[in-house]
Amino acid sequence: MEKLKGDNWFAQIQDDFPFPFNVIPTDFSWFISTWSELLGAIALVVGLGTRFTAATLIILDIVAWASVHAGNGYNVCDNGYKLPLIYLMMLIPPLLSGPGKASLDALIRQRLQQ
View 1: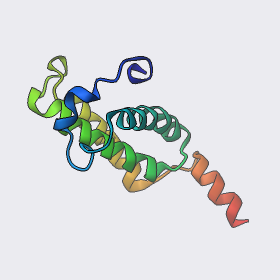
View 2: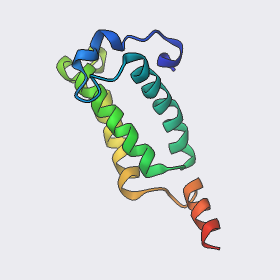
View 3: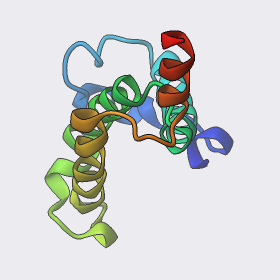
View 4: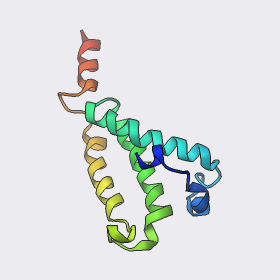
């Protein structure tokens, strides 16, 4: 929500983004990261496009880790990499196992098999 309501600060750190993200215009990067975080969280909660969404958020997390958090140590209070590490660990199970039985993905699969 901070990105949705806040100012675009990606221009200050664009040189720290890994290739190819450092050549993408910062306004576009800001837009993509904001909406990936917001819509991706909703999609994971309801179980829609689970593996794709988890992969997308993992890529976003790795870019954030490399460009913002990597040089700040582990501590969250120092803007360290602890929080991106937690997110990464949380996103690996849905990426590997896919959606559960109570997901929209499972409901869609069930409807298509009938």
